[in-house]
Amino acid sequence: MIKIENLSKSYGDKQVLNTIDLKFKKGKVYGIVGENGAGKTTLFRCISGLENYKGNISYDSNNLKDHLGLLLTEPFFFSKITGKEYIQLLANSRQIKLSNIEDKNIFDLPLKQYASTYSTGMKKKLALTAILLQKNDVFILDEPFNGVDIQSNLIITDIIKKLKELQKTVIISSHIFSTLADTCDEIFLMKNGEIVKKVEQIDFNKLESEMKEFSIENRIDKLELK
Ligand SMILES: Nc1ncnc2c1ncn2[C@@H]1O[C@H](COP(=O)(O)OP(=O)(O)OP(=O)(O)O)[C@@H](O)[C@H]1O
Image (cartoon, rainbow, N blue to C red; front, side):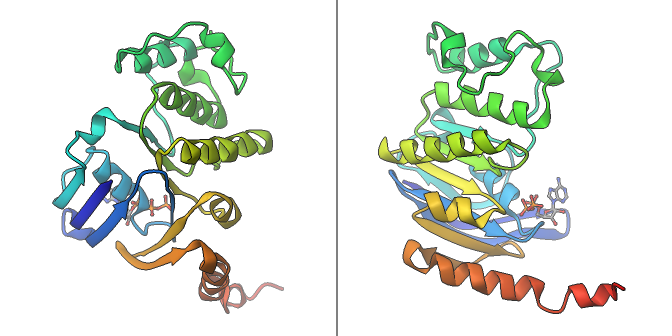
C-alpha cells in the first residue's frame, strides 16, 4: 500500500499541495480528477520522487521507485534513441531480459524511428509500453487517454483492467470522466491542492453531475456570444 500523510508542496511562495492524506491499495484502480492547475501532476511528481515535499510517502517497507511505472503527460526522450532502444533501456534498468520486442509492440509503433520524432500520441504509447514491459507493481498514469487515438484508448482501458486483475496498484488522472468511471474503484476530486472529495464507485454518477453543475453554470453567458 502507498500511504501519503500530511503531504504539502510549495513552489516558492505558492502552495500547490496542502496537507494531503491518501492511501492506494494493491489490486485497486484510483482516479484523480480536478480542474487544470488543481495539483494532480504535482501530486504524481511528489509520489514518484521527482519533487521534494513536506510530509511522508511510504510504500510498505519498499522503495517505491524500484516498483513504479510513471507515465507523464508529455513523455521526454533523448534525441538519438529509437523506440526499440528506449524499451530496451527501461527493461535493462530493472534487469529484465526482453526478447522479440517487435512482438510486444501492441500499438504498432515504428520502433526503428527515433522516439523524439514520434507524434504526441505515439510518444505516450511508447512510454506506456516500456513501463508495462518493466513489470512494475504500481502505475501512475497522468492523462493516459489524452492525445491518443480511439482504438488505443480502448486498448489502454483494457490494459488498466488487466493490471487490476493482476493485483497492481493503478493511479490515473483524466479529464474524461467516462473512462475513469469504467476503470476506477475510487475517484478523488482535487481542488486548489487539496483532496476535497473521495468517491466510491457507487456514487460516480453523482460526482459527474456535481462537477458539471459547478464548472458550466452561467460561464458561457459571460462571453456574450451573438
Ligand atoms: N515547476 C513549477 N513551478 C511553479 N509552479 C508550478 C510548477 N509546476 C506546477 N506549478 C503550479 O502548480 C499548480 C498545480 O499544477 P499541476 O500541473 O500539478 O496541475 P494539474 O492539476 O496537473 O493541472 P492540469 O489538469 O492542467 O494538468 C499550478 O498552479 C501550476 O502553475
